[in-house]
Image (tube, one colour):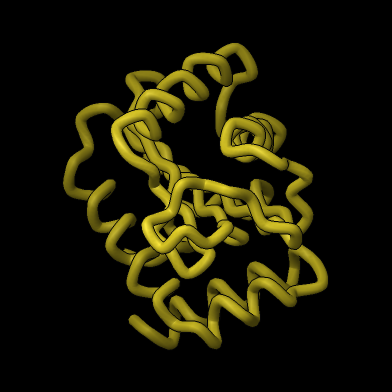
Length: 156
């Protein structure tokens, strides 16, 4: 599975303003609504799904990366949003470090396989320090997409 299959290209930002975990989640959900991938009226329910998931354990996987994710009946297909926080946000990561790179993944309620494959793909790609650093220093969304898709292609 490739990131291009589920990342909404209009739901990418290299300038998250969020200072808290909940603000990060809200901004990422807003990216999906603005991109037309999610209906505006679904945003509060998606937020609750993500908050409930975080209550089970942080999706901050360490090394400055977090992959908040959830499942909803209202999501017809796997979708993703990506955001970068230059300042970093305390996300409860296992390594205690702030998170800078956030990959939001939302899946249909009955999609275990694709959801898990996407999470595994993102986790594998983001283990690479050079890749993470390139994303952190990307100057605009077009650069972010190029870095993401080039690395995804290279590692397929």
